[in-house]
Length: 460
Ligand code: FES
Ligand SMILES: [Fe+2]
Image (cartoon, rainbow, N blue to C red; front, side, top):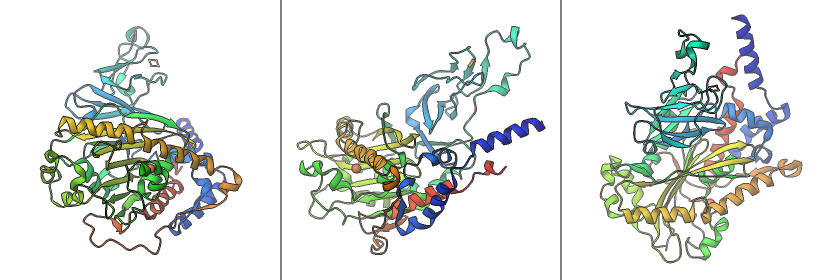
């Protein structure tokens, strides 16, 4: 018993090995300077901090796993990831959802090799141990002969995720028990998730499997962009402006840039003056007429009525976009709704996961148009996505090395000169501008605070 305690302690110490003192000092300084708009460049894609990031950020934040609609029937499952954890998320016979480590308890072999399907049990490809889709170990080949009939299988079930919950159909999990409850964690972000996900009482349909791809960029570049960066749009996506698919110039005037608790943030933008845009983001009448029922109030509908573009990020790495946008120069623009997750693979590489959602009761023709628009804009081959990915990679490369890494980047936009929007209908701290960097400052502050604060299980 004493020996085991000693081993556990050693393992914990090794796992929590801190980066060198210089990096930790830099991190401590950054906690103080980021709200003044100064971001140390070397902290963006920092290999020395990566293990700490996995433990202290990804090890205690709520991470998106799937939408409930991806596993509608008993036995349905998907395999998802929380950083380097592979996780089976499975719908049970009683329609509840369970999530468990995709790792056999015999030798740790990856158990489930397919990304989605319907199974009542999973059999390990190495020696054949078999688990029910709730994680229970139910069969061991040759058990009677080599383990004995009385061998207790109940202690060798798949490890369940310590925390699992859902909001607006979005299923989240945490690999430790150190996250606050999901409602508390999401805070006012729930209002904006409702704005996008709860337009219809008929619910959301997840269209196809998520698209995913790997880029040579740190995962935070995506989060920093989506949490508040309206500013890049007419430069990074200039070709879209030239093709007439985006307003030609400064869209800073269409509020608002909304800072939320917990490092979450959103931009909820209307049409710039002089740019014709339909109310309700161009959603079809079948959806607009059911908004009050879907939302359960009128204020969300009022907000949607004057909105053209919603972007944002749930701390730390789940971004979203609900936007009225054109797929080419000829067809009518339509709204799209997409979630994307920036999954870290290492300090300079991430796997992007991108889901396309549409309201279940929308007309089929609209669904098809919306999907095609997503594919051409923010799908893996989408023009906006390509533009952004190129920049995310350029930041990761551009902040390397002693010279570039040694400077403080500027995150000062709107620090003292932007006013709150008094007309704002939603919660949070809105600035009356589409361009600002308050969300980014608060995102990075939250990230640095997580990194600098030990987990409870590090206190050995
Ligand atoms: S490793 Fe899974 S059965 Fe042996
Ligand atoms: Fe972009």
